[in-house]
Image (tube, rainbow, N blue to C red):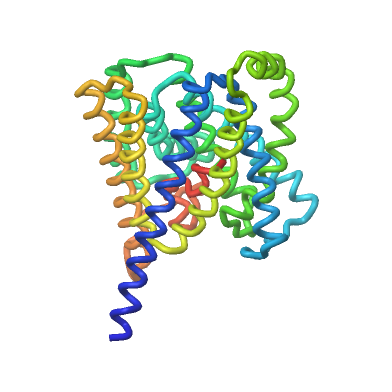
Length: 345
């Protein structure tokens, strides 16, 4: 009886974690699109900078004031040698995501972001010469095919927004690879990652935002009918962006890797549906099919990755011959199903 209650509570906690993760993620995406489209605040650098500021403050409050999460201490030298390069790529990733939101619909942007597993595999193969099981390569085919179908049938296609989203995938993959190599020995969680990276990202982005968008923001403040209420919405999106980080931390610790992968892909579908209901962007039948094929491909990719990892744990399982540059650890052969830090800020 007691075991049954514990099991039911575990399932309930997992569902609660997934629902609040979905809620924060979709809310932040929709709010950012609303800021660019409805409020006509067309300054993605400044929006990203505000999010970084809110996340810097939130990380400090959670770790230093409320002490809800223990601080992972990093050597001062490593902060500049390891964390700063990651923060730079992290900053580019977030900015490109916001730039793409300004020019293309949420549904198209979310579909392109699903291309991240493929870019991670290709980058690791080209740059690091890492070996991947043929099943990993095969699982990427529906992802690539679905994105190609969604791109050629997108009714609101914008080349600049498309390139921003695509390069955002490359930035996400680069950040993931850098995390493996630069943060070796530091077992970061999402909150500590924000605590260390958000201040660096704010420092990197503040001056370009002021130089490139400062005059435009002043002009926007002078002509907008309700500037202060609009600013409240913009800063609220920053607060919710930090809450999203906390929800990622909670869902990772409340679910399995497979559940996280499936929930992540369903979250994309949910975000696409909600954005369509709010913004009414036109979606053709073939475009919807392309999006669905991409999400199914991501789920299949996650299943293949999990299956290969489980096989590697079985004693006596034949191992694939390694080349001198092939990593020893089986886990190094498998790029992330979903970058668990991808939704941050």
